[in-house]
Structures are given as structure tokens and as C-alpha cells.
Length: 123
Image (tube, rainbow, N blue to C red; front, side, top):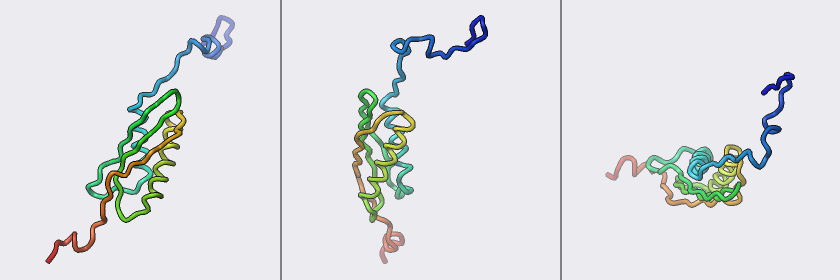
């Protein structure tokens, strides 16, 4: 913006802070970010495993997130859940600008790795 004298004033100087409004990010958008972050934190899922999904409750600038996922087994379930928590907190904070005080990870199913006998059938 320029005035008649040719100087430029920032937009924040024109509108008082109380009248500028706010950006509201929908809960479903935060849930999509969280689900994508969970996928990024995990190795590729077993063949029939469902993709992670998330539910979110946003209050003010904080998101409480529950991630539902399926894991291959055997694996270190605790370490995988911790990796998901870290990635979800990092990505939601970075992309949505929200604090994430709680991430609950719910493992809905464990998929056994195929063994040679299950791949070829029994004789």
C-alpha cells in the first residue's frame, strides 16, 4: 500500500488487532494432518492393514488427538506408538500452528507377518 507521499505502511498498522479476525482450522483438517503424520512415522503397512485415521478435538489453539492404526507384528509396539506421537505433535504444530498436549494412539489390530507355510499353503 502506498500513500500520496510514496511511503508504505504495513497492513497491521491500518487495522486494529481486535478487528483483524482469526484463522480457524477445521477439526477435520487437523485430523487429516494427524493421520498423514502417523503414516509418515510408520513403515509401510502390512498388505491388508487399514491406513491410520485420527479424531481431533480442538479448543482454542490446542488439539487433542486420537490416532487409530494397525501394525505389523512382531514389532516393538511401544516404540512405534512413541514415533507416531512425536511425528503427529511435530506436524500438527508446524502445519496448523496448534499446541498438541495429548496424542492417544490406539492400536486396533496387529497383523502377523506371513510365514513360509502360510504363503504356500499346507501340503
